[in-house]
Image 1 (cartoon, rainbow, N blue to C red):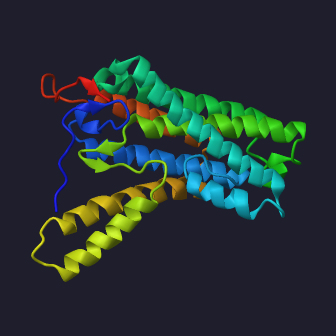
Image 2: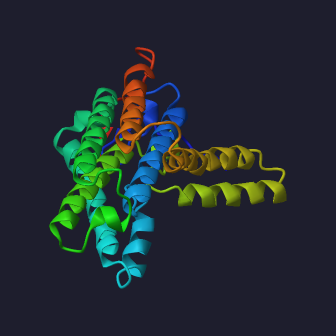
Length: 262
């Protein structure tokens, strides 16, 4: 079983291979950043900014015991959906955003938005407070302020996750790593059962790299490695994305067909 890398760009399914020499590495970096941002959001506010499946669980199971956090989780889901829709619309109106230069520009814009959203969140819900203490009572002024911060953060992370949907032909589950975990297990088991298939072990390793990268990012944020604040961790993540966008580029003339398709 093999996967054929995408050779062009698409308005809704852009592959990082059109921009970078090492697309798989690049989307792993983005996945690491998404994990860090998720860890920051969950540690301080009790909701995720990238793992929207987790937010759906929080929203449905905590509605009675902690309605403020439950509704906040739904706000994050809506903010994420809006971010995804905005990228699709932007690429529809300006197809060049699906090409190499446009994708790099979106990466930088997403990083700036992520940091800006974190700055707003730090002003609204300072890092000295966490969980319910930071969220406030449902529909209170403090809750609305926190909801704005969470919605902005989810919107920004969604844009970051939508810049590249795949890396070198393999889907990049930046916003949720569950599918990659399932792929890693099923390919890993298949490789033990069918030793005549030489691609399964490689696919298992590549798929497992995504949940590992997300987990490392989340662990870094939750553990609070070093003296960095919430804003510091987010700022560092944004810098990583910008550096990758600017310097991890293809050799001139080596990129595939840049013309986007629907």
